[in-house]
Image (cartoon, rainbow, N blue to C red; front, side, top):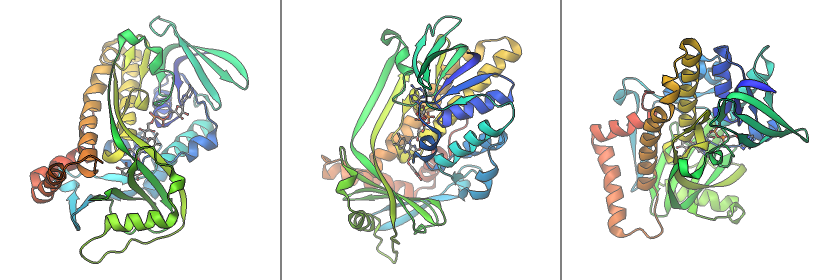
Length: 393
Ligand code: FAD
Ligand code: DHB
């Protein structure tokens, strides 16, 4: 098989890249190791930056998002028994965010790719095994599909295969540098069939740890609890989860956390990771394949989107003008934004969580950070500007 851009991974990065390239008339093939049902069910991110929403609309994937997505104009920071609202549009020239789950974006992009006549091939249960000669003019992806080993010859390879994929590892170790930070806690994620107890997301810092109240629809709540690293979700009964959430969200005033049937739980470790550069010859990395942020800043999915927008622009520019300038600048352009997201995600994580070895001084200092955001329009605007997403450069 041969194509112009061989895309490894059918997560949000790979699927959106295929869509952007197809609309510009550039051939591509997407190889996804899992089956369709698995990819469509994987519970992950929920907050879309304004720029992500704009890109999805522009490429024709905004129909259901506009009907079912929940636009949010603010978030609440809850600490010391009080809530403080951060208004997003007033500090950002009118920008806001949209609550629309990653699962739904993936379903929308898959449906478009499988149903639209002439759309690029999307192969499920097609596992990339190796990328041969990524630094030559003619890289080849070896993959297994329907029990048979096959090859995909390409002009370019897009490594969109997530943190555990093969693309990042196809770059020789002496050509890259990795930057990593791990955190001594994880998130227990909960999906519950109950109407959200709030209109906007609540990020809570409590002496027992962080909690986040998010949502998936007017009838489904998405909640997260800080738990020790290595926690087994089965150790948490549903009653224990609701009791702990109620404790961490408790307000001095009147507020009740509504309970309902929990339909899924999972544990996610927290990690910050960047591999530089994001390009080796004709192999370009995008999304979690190149970097990971801890989820408290809601940046992971949005960064994957900005990477592939940058990659698509560079490939289209090359096709239209013959100039490799944007391709050559790909890694530098992406990394500027990636490090801003790493900084913000680190700040949100460090400010909102309780470390097991935290000193009383560190606890008070983090509360002072939150007091500052709650009391200063400048500090609040700084948070808002990062939360809605920095502009694409
Ligand atoms: P992925 O979504 O990981 O997609 C990669 C795809 O590549 C997968 O479909 C995988 O099956 C496929 N693949 C892997 N190896 C191969 C191979 N060899 N051959 C072919 N295909 C392959 N972000 C937030 O902002 N908020 C959150 O709450 C949040 N929760 C998360 C929870 C978990 C458990 C994880 C892992 C991530 C979470 N994230 C969250 C981050 C966000 O979901 C990711 O940043 C986003 O999924 C990145 O998209 P991607 O397309 O780069 O990678
Ligand atoms: C969600 C996840 C996040 O990490 C976040 O910061 C906000 C919302 C969510 O899954 O809804």
